[in-house]
Image (cartoon, rainbow, N blue to C red; front, side):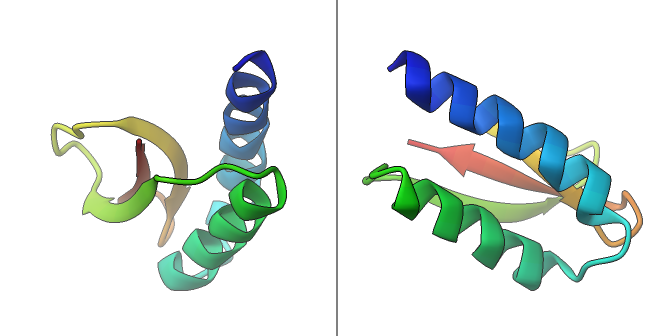
Length: 73
């Protein structure tokens, strides 16, 4: 579980740094690939407008900060 939390934290930082130059679908696919590589299963990633009340953890932003990618388990 600690490795999972660390992975999500690192993805959050990496996703935020790269988000401004990537389309949301591309960033979402990269985050999903990293989670799959770590062996995480039973999750979903959703693209929502920034400021919406997410029902999960925000793991990245995209489209110049106007959208967020939310992780739900």
